[in-house]
Image (cartoon, rainbow, N blue to C red; front, side, top):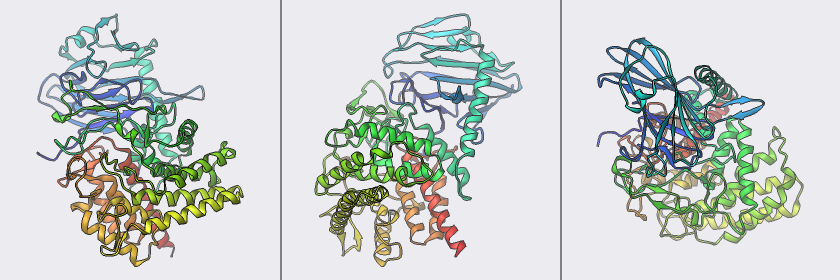
Length: 593
């Protein structure tokens, strides 16, 4: 196969996401929630997924796609022999009456740039993952699509029959299409669309302006921050791993998963990224999500929850869909919710640490620290010798993973700092004892023959997740043991062009055929930690090219540079943000010295 890239951009407003191809088609859009059925899902089945396309009538054209600067508003331009036009796609987000307004509404403006191009527009939504073909009922200036759980309506100033029949027509003026789920647009079309566009541009540019940025990789960090923001479901604060499902980790690998859920394994990295960017509102909102789950969690935490905190995320296969590039199965739900992943307790403790210790935050829930911190420490103590599936979610293998032990150690260290803030000697002593216990167990994972820490106790397999022992300061950055550990991982897992495998051993589905992009960013982070700044920069300069034409990263990258796995992957974008900040801080320290 040629090098594979995801040729599409993503827009959203923290209520829904839409994936729009360079051909002007909405390939994937789920409403009213990230994890709802798609309205448009040709990403997974061209025939049954439905379409919402705007394109030239002639097959001969050039095209380009880009974001308006520092926004999540996407432009797709087309040039034909008759003229030029662009589509401006916007998910409205703005402040109205001192509140965030984020309707389940997609605005598509077709802007005439020159000449008189002939175009086609078609809109054919689908329900229940392609099983429902709705009846279309027309009004004077709208089409209503029936048989959905809520009202779906397209309001437009394009002649309705041109859309229903997908008839070619001359674009001689700007045209507007507003698709709504639920409450329809009852206000004037052109005026409202322009106002929402203007205010949404202002919102995103103000949000970016308030980001704290280093003076390196700013363009890449801004795009990564905007992508990350899109994946927070504002109603509850939950942050999903990706807005897509069943995009394969490699072609014909059957590693096709639904990532439209909230993984606790991502807590530390995500909150660290928001903290470094100086965006504490998202951090506090995410803690609200975590706290509500903790209050109903019973005796343990699951690895993942739905965006509204639901525990059961039953995994099913949709046999009627052909899959992305015919990659089956198409999965909805994720069976990993049944797994035991014991790093989650430390992830939460380390993730929420700034809320209790950062003087910039007037965190209103600080008084509830004892119940939360005590419970999480209790779980660390309960699970310290318990085998689990690990962060890679092995389905048929359980071990005492080094990564889990690392987060037991880090979580206990974080709990100690929180307890110290409140002068809680009893909690401090408990946290100190547990951190030492975790450290003793981590040392049992050291393999003196390889001069490296292995994936788990009683195995020789190496694992990229152990790079976090360096970035989280378990291993001293100037020690020979740390240098040897990096060297062993480089020898076993480092691929061409700075890519990095998670591991190379046989797992539930065979031997991994693609690299996991966040591991490469962890490697860059670790290089910066040990003072290999030149190597870190060189590697990061390579990695930034593995985004698509808009700088958006996928989950996996094969050694030929192809993008695979779910897209966009928040884990990958968080990895870039944190690695770039680490390099910058080390550079600043060196300059000062």
